[in-house]
Image (cartoon, rainbow, N blue to C red; front, side, top):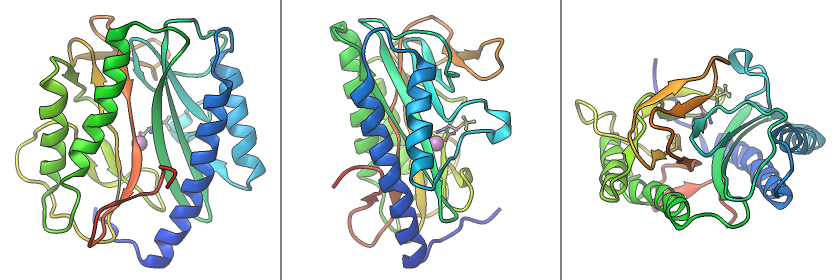
Length: 250
Ligand code: MF3
Ligand code: CO
């Protein structure tokens, strides 16, 4: 499968999808508090996205039963919204996708709920920074593996585990396109980066072991050791200059 290089017109459309996504994230963030259920947060996101004549990218994707993935504490990704209530001290990862005018946009954030332990706050901060460490290498002529290795090196310098079972991805007309974007070193240098590539770069970082398992719901990834995990993701365009982060408010 080829890597789809996007034209300026396609990137404009992806910018529109991403703007809706930014606003959906901000709306969900504004509702985070102890006692709210993950299903309520999912509904807030879905209603908003639909109100913009957009569609939640994850809903029914390979049968996924929600609009958001909401993953708490030891849940890594793909937590299914339900009756579980947020509690003080939790960290909660919210992953959302928006499909608009034929293009997808994808982003995730991890938030603290109320007072959270210092070690969990550090995990959130390092996970976010690991994305920016990788982004330093996101320019034409570099190879994809440079992004991956920078993320891994930074996260592991704090003693954290970098999840291997899941990776970032190209994004555009499809939610998941080539290339895969690992957050860890793999054999080879990966494809050469080119202007017009659009990547969802999404480090998933565990406080303890990198190893994960899937719950009986067949979706939710959790850490094997039960320690906390954080996720940070943006949709990024490779340009001749610094990369454009579509899903971050400018
Ligand atoms: N952001 C995730 C990803 O890019 C979530 C999609 S999985 C879904 O892979 F099934 F929930 F849609
Ligand atoms: Co993604």
